[in-house]
Amino acid sequence: MLDAMRSDAWRRAAAVLAIPLLLAVSATPVAAAAASASMAAPAQPVPSAQGAPNACDDSAYSLLGGKWNGTLNWSFQSSTSPEEYTNSAVLTVIMRSFANMTGARNDCGLPDNVGATANYLGSTSLAPGVTKRGFCNGKDGHNVVGFGPLPSGILAVTCTWTNSAGRMVESDIRVNSSIFWALTVSTCHYWQELLEPTMTHEIGHAFGLGHVAERKHGRLTMSTTSDGQCNNGETTLGWGDIRGLNHLYPL
Ligand SMILES: [Zn+2]
Image 1 (cartoon, rainbow, N blue to C red):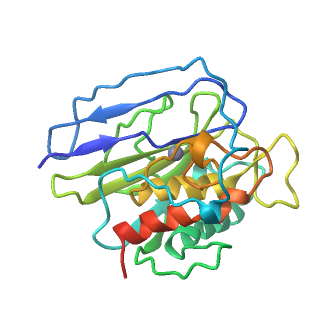
Image 2 (cartoon, rainbow, N blue to C red):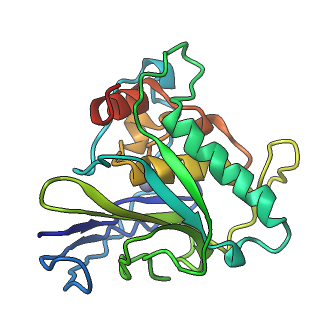
């Protein structure tokens, strides 16, 4: 079975210039895979979303090329949770982020016709299959969310593995443990990033959504870049995000 492994699924902080672009493909069944990767660092500054349409008026989406056939069962590597918070407080935000995707949470008045489902299995000692450099490595058949080192400026990286039938077999999310995360808007300080919009974005990848360009579609949850510190606008999905989910997971 051919496994395609992807990590064009990172999320970038609003204030950083370098963009790692990672592409990796493997041609072996499950375990270790020969992977190729490339890094690209464009010279352009981070484009602004200011000219982008409102999320409710933007129909754009892209797909990674795989989808789950059933429920996405996931675990949390709770030992890596930021020490300033309780595990349960962090877990609550992650669970809410899953619900944002599976429930098509939006403020556009769009109905929830998304058939994607997720289920939390519990805490795990397993790590997500994402390296500290943001590469995909360590596929183990478990979908794991965890915190850990990542290159600076990268908020989080999602790696997904898809078989030759286009069925997703694993999605792992590593969240950058060097970022000062905030769990709620009301407690967010200006140097912090909110966890929920980033997690919602990454979970979009975990379900098979790809990126849309920041400059043209920067208000959508699946745009490449965070809206900035303490901004939770991308916690709610836009029209394009929901169109993508409906395409993959029609009811
Ligand atoms: Zn991303």
